[in-house]
Image (cartoon, rainbow, N blue to C red):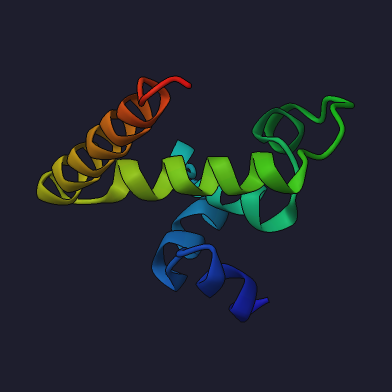
Length: 98
């Protein structure tokens, strides 16, 4: 179990606080656990019968989680890269027509 918590980014002190009712897991922690287990957040929290997300959905959720957790300067770099890629795709689409 220790590896599971480590992989989900959950410290032993946070786990102890949850077990003792001192605090409750954050949405970020719950999302990490859901991604690790390959289930939706609603399934983890509410027990809904939603199917597990596809691999693409899990990867998308992981990318979003990492982006949100990144420092502002990293998020700005990602935005700049995405804008550059979008511009390159637009320029390619608007290229010479035969």
